[in-house]
Image (cartoon, rainbow, N blue to C red; front, side, top):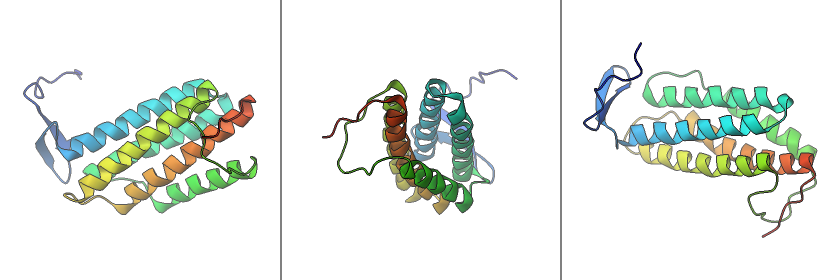
Length: 171
């Protein structure tokens, strides 16, 4: 299979809903896909910076982001159970840290800084999906997953700084 098709050279692309549909590349569906894809790539970079014990969790999140994209286009296995998993991860990490009493500047260790980038990109992807839902049928689980994922990424960034012995900088 060739990576290039030459069918998108004039500003349109094919997406798959219940059937193949041709849309402009600036369509809200394509924007949402792109924001989720960018988030997935940033999480891949985050996975490259963390210790081996955290990689499987991040790879699961990356797989779920593919499912979020599938949910926008056609079908998905993303469920409320995936949201519950994120909430469990947040609660587990939170229990291992001192309470968060103020806003903190994004940054710290390299891994934590990347987790903050992921969080910001996740928020953008969430906004894109919310805009998309005004015009297309987007399963609610996609919004909820992205929202909870940004909470997880913030918590994970804090945890990574503690794990690295790097103090957070309050606002």
